[in-house]
Image 1 (cartoon, rainbow, N blue to C red):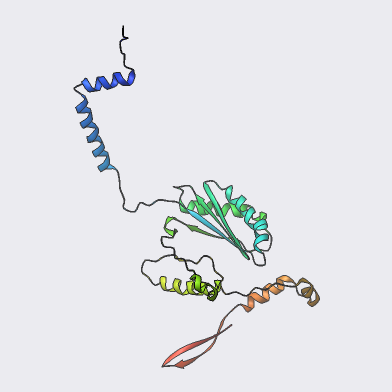
Image 2 (image 1 turned 120 degrees about the vertical axis):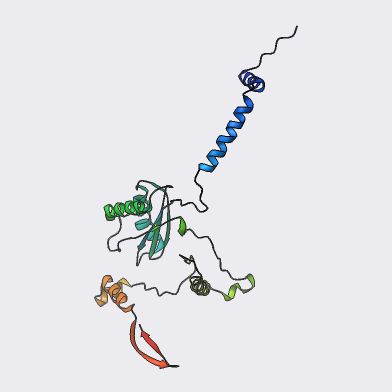
Length: 244
């Protein structure tokens, strides 16, 4: 004797819709509602999505990267993490320079994000070492994300002929040419070794000469200037002479 088969809830619903004369009408109505929704929803080829990012740049002259991480980067990260709406915090620390980037949640107004960061840093400026300049705060958006990335590297057989500084100079020339292209906005160089002069003071000699570190910094700052000292004519045009 075989037991009578009894379908469950899904089987009962399936049987009802198969045998119901309203099923084709419901199917047609669903398609019509979908078409109406598709035509009524706004569409943009380039939707304006607000994903604000804020860069906090700190000029830490005299700080090596290892010291700047402990004294500047980590305290600044803790301050930024306490800002309402911040989703991620990134940082980059080099000798004499610290950059901390805060990325907010999607939909946060750009101006509001910059204002929150500014107020939070001003309220906790005592957490940073004394003597460093006030952090520079720059707001960025989704339009500032790089869409073209160019990497410069030497071929293996010519690696000994190219230094980081040489590649950096090539990158500067390439960046100069790229800025002339129409519709090119922000461009920047990451990595490499730019031309610079590093001064490492000797505390004993400074003490013997009666010169403080702040006096030395002021002298170097004042010396790092250029002046127009004159001009000369060549090929019927005036060529300025700059000294510094």
